Length: 80
Image (cartoon, rainbow, N blue to C red; front, top):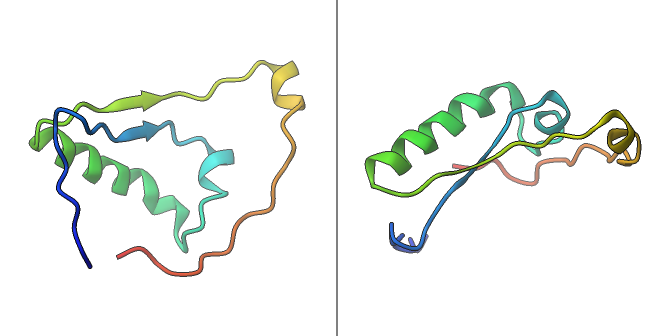
């Protein structure tokens, strides 16, 4: 696999808040492990001087009612 070099001046991983409705839809065999994996990515990014962006999803009760439910994706391959 070819690795693309990351330039800390132009690269920023985004960390999402881990809400059950989001994590449950992840195409991964163990969604409960994702917060720990996110922490690993966050620590690695900080070690290399990358800026980290945080995304917090928040909806009012009215807004949440308008979000359609989606089927949980099935993983096609497990990330290495």
